[in-house]
Length: 176
Image (cartoon, rainbow, N blue to C red; front, side, top):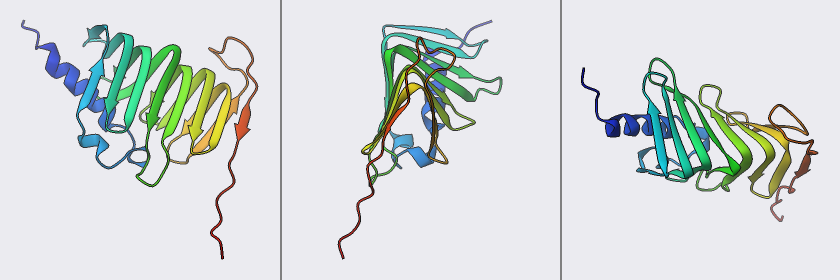
């Protein structure tokens, strides 16, 4: 039995990752922008539905950027993306929600994007910036649809307790 070339499978998996990004957290042109991947190594297991990139991984499509020392992409039996996990000393995700909104920036030793739930987990040294608002802690969850943040000082995967800190900028009021 002949195995299909890897390039089309990789392109399909990356397209699924980027196209699955919620429209509420993406510029209109992001889905049609080219996908650029840089890494030192790739291990693809088509049967398991995983692609693991290692070595200063950088994935970009439009305003979306995902980086880490290691990025693992998982898909289900139907071939749909279920989760993308970036790990490293400071794994990073950023995206501009809309032209008139500031870029969302997120860091952690682990950054997990759950596609079906439209949720981002930031684990250990977690940090989230949106405009002037910042959230820090051992563990942060950001719910994309509801724009809700949940933060904890410690959780599974957090090396040591990291108190939750938050800075909220007041909304600018129009002058009368």
